[in-house]
Image (cartoon, rainbow, N blue to C red; front, side, top):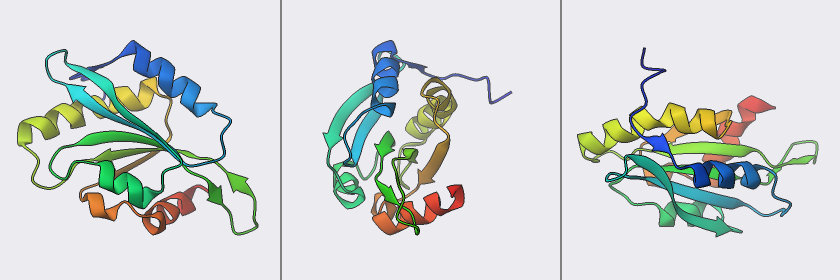
Length: 142
């Protein structure tokens, strides 16, 4: 039942941006931060970043408001192969308004589906978003 519940739709321009982001040619870390426009009941683009570390990305996230992040991360494997996994991170900090948390939680699955995202993570504290945390999470996808 909850799988089919859609609280907010995903902006069509954002869906196109996510698809082109998946096939970007740059070899640096990059991020797309998305928020919910309450008036439109829609997930929209908030900001885009090129060449941004997980720690710098952490500084761009609001401490008391949820956000969705799609992060293209340059991952160097133990055998020196390089891949660029697309990570979906749902930032839902402790202390958010319950109404906001519900809107974001209820919109997450639709965004993951529309963006065709498979590496889905959640953080409850923006300070948790570090290179070490991300490498640890991606370790499960070897």
